[in-house]
Image (cartoon, rainbow, N blue to C red; front, side, top):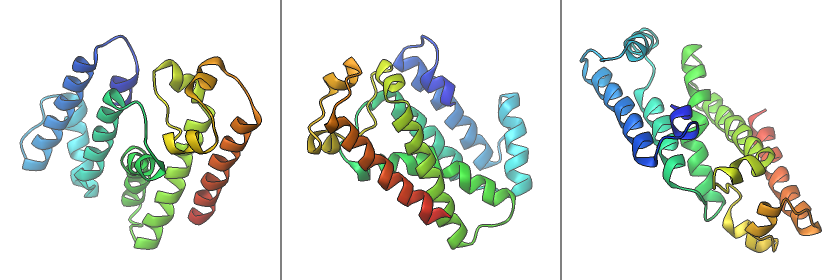
Length: 179
C-alpha cells in the first residue's frame, strides 16, 4: 500500500482508487465477507488467528492516502498525527502478535515508531522534496528562518543546521521515552 502511494507514475486519482480498493477489502474482512484478492484472503486469516485490530490497518491506509494529497505539515502536532497513523500501527501490530499490549508497551512502541518515522523524514529531506513533499513542519521552517528554496537548492546554512539539530533533539527524546 505504501508503494501505491509513493512509487510509479499513477495519477493521484488512480493511487487513491487503489487504496480505496484495499479499504474495501478490509471492510469485507471486518464484516466476515470473503476478500476478493489473495493478499487479503491471507491477511484475513492472520487477522483472525491473532485477533489483530483492523483499525491499525485502516490507519496505515489512511496515512498512505494522505501522502497522495498532503504535501506539507503546518506544525509538529500535525506531523505527529500523521506518524500515529503511518508508523505507530506497525509497532502495535507487532506487539499484538506477541501478546504484549499493556498500555506501557503500546506507549513505548508509539514513541519508538514515531521517532523512527521522523528519523526517516530528516534523512530523506531531498528525496521527499523530489516527491513535492516537505515533512519539516512549516512553523519550524519559519522559526529557524529556512525557506523551501533552501531545500530545493540543497543549501546548507547555520539556520539549516539549527533546524535539523532541533528536529534531531526532539526525535531523540521520543526514542528515549520508548526505551
